Image (cartoon, rainbow, N blue to C red; front, side, top):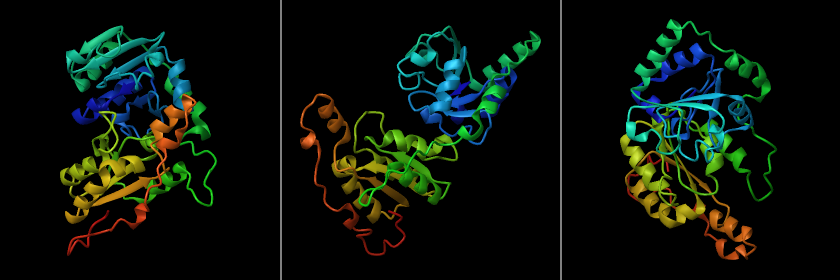
Length: 306
């Protein structure tokens, strides 16, 4: 069972869980539906190119995917590979989204909660028993459940990104909004930073550009003024647009915690140059000391969380 942000914003979470229980299915989400099923024993996390080893194994063994309120784009489906050889039911309230990114066996235009409830009724009428797939998944999960931390690769001069983000995730109040800018760090940030509800995750990488994270965090701080905003931003994106927006955040006294992940390079360009056996030096930059950025620059701006 795959749920997207549409399930979260429409209030269909419980109906989808009831359908998953009825058919004996583990549950997963898209990135934009992240943490919708957090804490559920049958939850396997994010479905797609961000799946961990356990989720990838479970998805590979499934013979059917019921996707509700999601787009089935190339990241969710790993370029379509995660749907190959499976029966796919795609439910969305917007008929124009069906078959938009992935061709499926059973497209259903309908409200997420009502469709899930209708499917439960039809299964009951047909007296079709649930499978044991979810129970098998939970039995196999064991100690593998939870984020894979791996060895700490911190050095005397650097901090392992997984270690840093894991500790930050634990330290920042749980009622936060999470924003991630684009950059080489995002694959870790996407899965390491959690939210209480998918609507508290603000996606800032839709255009594939860097430098939009800080401005998105500013907007989120006004949309949710009673919550802190946790913004994960790379050094390249911060230098491109984040620094000027940081000044605005400070002068406007916004509740924003900025995590600046500095690897001293434009990561995507560095990787492309290396892959082409070209000198990556042009993609590395001797940034100034970002820590010296003023915490506040306006009189009375004493409550800034930046």
